[in-house]
Length: 210
Length: 124
Image 1: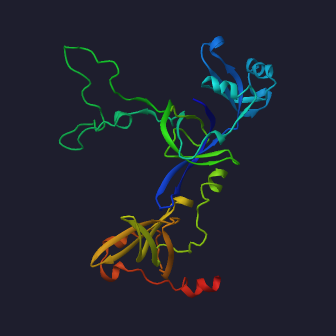
Image 2 (image 1 turned 45 degrees about the vertical axis):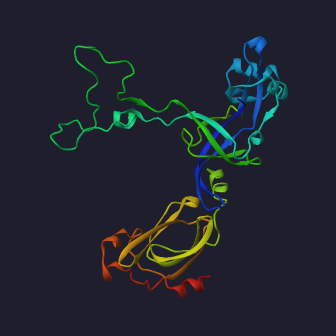
Image 3 (image 1 turned 30 degrees about the vertical axis):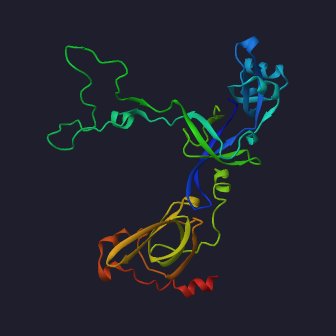
């Protein structure tokens, strides 16, 4: 579905008219520019390639610079493809601008970002294991996982067993977040709830499939 | 960060009085019950103020029928009509959680000699 590339600004809260507090995340989205159209005949699928954040030519690689120059476009730091229907292909030519005006208040969106890295995390933090007893003779292992399998049968540990390891810093999508407010002048969208990633990290906001 | 200050704080109230932990205040607020809006007053000592901007809240403690009652209000909630300051307290701490363990006279906050209601009026 069609979407925009942007930046996470941070969280705050707003109040509804009834006085209920709503936790919101501020997102700065676009304006993005269509840099390439992909169609079914040539590429096997319909999509719009979209660029965000204008940069100097020196800041992009030479192959990418050539890609932009082909259509007399400016240079963009971030590119992303959105799979779209054919009617969207006709509507948005290469070079046309996408802004937050495509979103409406109370509409649902999916937000993709890179989650905060937690480093090498133990099993309690990573998989919500309950750990071990604090007393009753527990020796040295208070936050361990316990047994990871049986004995002679199967005499191995099953694949995908939940264990300690690297946590976070992975592409994460949160589905069906409600848009609380759209500010066209500042290219800003307020979304209800939390969004993966640090402040100022890049995020992709997509419309939800109907 | 600029944006969050500008847009995130747009709903901020401008007429919030300057009160601190230790002050005795009267909060006039509304709430919805069974579809109707009702008004109520909560009076007590402010035992903490926390957060910044839209996220700031304050906690009020009072003794009701010998039982301690605490209520947390968001400072910028539209349901709060007015915050009236009754007296200014003298405290050595910003968070007065020790009041929860004190009884009788020790559970009170002494009035400030410098920060009197008069002094604040003259400032304005």
